[in-house]
Image (cartoon, rainbow, N blue to C red; front, top):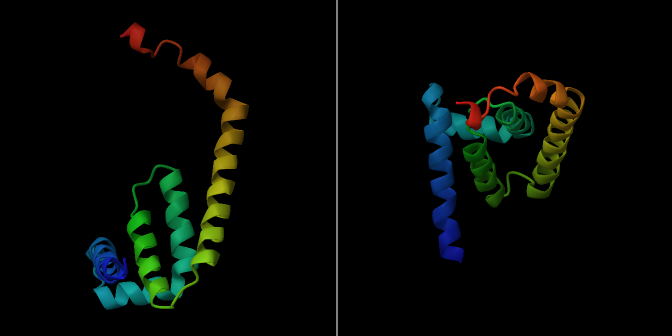
Amino acid sequence: MLQRTFVAVPAAIAVVALVVGSCGMNADETLRALDQYAFVILPALLVAEQFGIPLPAVPALLGFGALAAHGRGSIPLMLSTMAAVALIVDLAWYELGRRRGAEDLKSNETVGIGNL
């Protein structure tokens, strides 16, 4: 188990470096930015993904996990932050569906598999 952890940490760092590094940052700059701004970047990526924008939230979470494995981040704090952000966005989507869902379903009645 311990041997797999040592292999997973560099692999997670490499994934983050490849995804985020495509915007002109090298691996060191990417990890430094993730280390400094993780509690801003990761919730923003989560919100963007919940709204359907394809951004690399999972590789960034892996990178934060790699940083936390080296003692440079708090996993319980990040998990509670991400859970709170996800809950807020999910409740917003729920409320939007509760208020406008029936209206949207009525307007889209003709768009069904049987009507194709």
